Image (tube, rainbow, N blue to C red; front, side):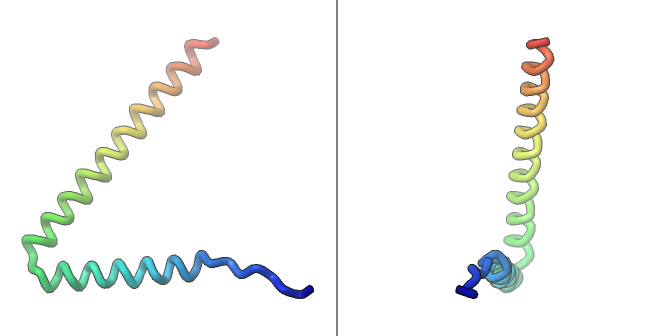
Length: 68
């Protein structure tokens, strides 16, 4: 009866760090042009998600204010 469920989050975080390390090693071995290309893809993706969230937040705020 003293059994407690163990949380799997730390293990998942550890595996994500290991996977990230593997990706970094692969990119470094592939060369700098691939590293810069991947950085560009990540930058465009992050900016796109941020823009989408900001426009969605503004739309939700306008809809909330229109109801008053």
